[in-house]
Image (cartoon, rainbow, N blue to C red; front, side):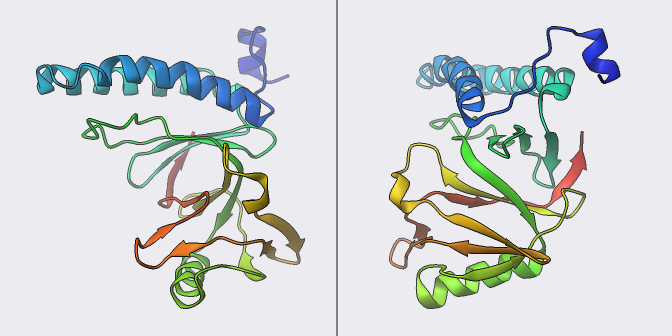
Length: 198
């Protein structure tokens, strides 16, 4: 048992996507209450958003023993990862005004290097999907780039499966890309490089 677990015996490790989804819903409701006031004085709304983002970060960091990993990216986003490798992200950009900073939960997160990110982008531009692409995976560390896969709430048939191979993974399935909209048509997210593991 870790020192933090001994200090806080009520700490329970978040082990699943459903637990992260519940955490997200709890905080999204709090952000939505503030965002519902968007027609009011925007400086007050932004101040309230900043305060709530700080409170979320403080609580996650205080209870970091509940998570497999907690880290911040170079853009300031805060990620929490459950023991099943599901992930939740809090965007650092508080100037959203119409969108909660608490992002949807993803069922799986892996960590890749810059070359793998470029490979994904090029493959999507050329082929509109990724089938059988091999990515080099690395440990979560400063400079590693989080790749979140399989957005909770998307149909199961669009899910990407991961085949572990020596030094990396092969993505199986379809990460479709709408060339006209220049956006992904099913759930994945390439984050910014990790700046700090917490």
